Image (cartoon, rainbow, N blue to C red; front, top):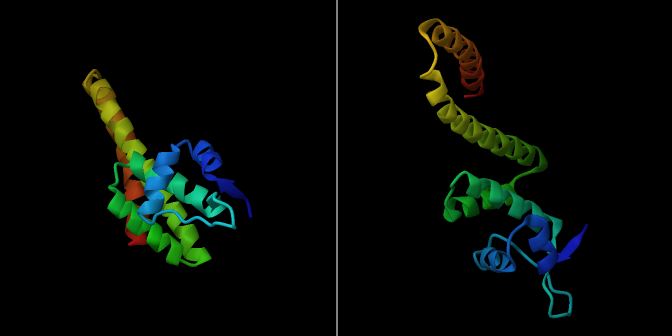
Length: 137
């Protein structure tokens, strides 16, 4: 298992040392000390920082991120894999929402025939997605 000093971890996660300190104080990250004055973080801390960054990109408040990290640490390997997939899908949906908002001004420029064709394409794919979501719930 790899271990990192705070500066190494900050560089790998593309955050500041101060951010790592803050998350550590909030209990979102754990560290180890082995007789020296340095704190050492494991690969788990790097994974947690990457998850925190993804959640922050979704404008999720830190209290909810902390709660999700807690659930993550309590899960088994199989349920952990499910959570990773769910987080990825949530991130993808957020990106799709952004792209749809960017699409709106372009749709306004289409004539009626082009608009009907685009709507048909979107409704076919949207119907498939809705069917999958219904099966999962």
